[in-house]
Image (cartoon, rainbow, N blue to C red):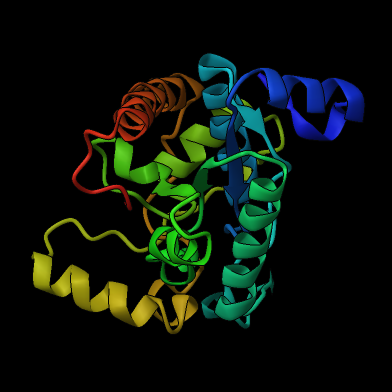
Length: 244
């Protein structure tokens, strides 16, 4: 793994000239995650996933874009940028990487609200670059079997596996969808994209109280195994659906 921010220009340029490089851009958010998780949770998790991926596959790791589209969490705390802003930032970074002769990029997303501005960005960049860029946008929760939550069992377990900045004594049960049908859950999900607190009341989707570091490591290992496999599939050109 080469972490871009710690490199020196001559050595980095030499590395790029010597061998084709693949870059990874992690994208997170700054938003409330209940009383027990830090507002950096999405950025923390996606940073660790991108780090492990880059280390395993020997990719170039870019600094995490820590701001995302999180307006739906108001009036709870969030620091948000517009969808168009995030799309522009990713576009500019990818075209800048191309100017440095880096033509393959994985955008690893860690926040659900970023999905819309990242949708079809691969096609946009192929067109802008006249097919010189291959960009793959992947959201990490698509690579695990468990249903994703927000500050619930899954996300809290993942944080326990990678961070010490958790206050489990403050963990509270949030919206639990057990017993609901798919239609009801989908309806709540659509409403949550407009007002997360209106749906969850306390800003938590799920129940974090039984989350453990061990479960978090199991989930993280599953994500990494499936994500690494997906990236290799993308690189060999055998994937029919590159955007997740």
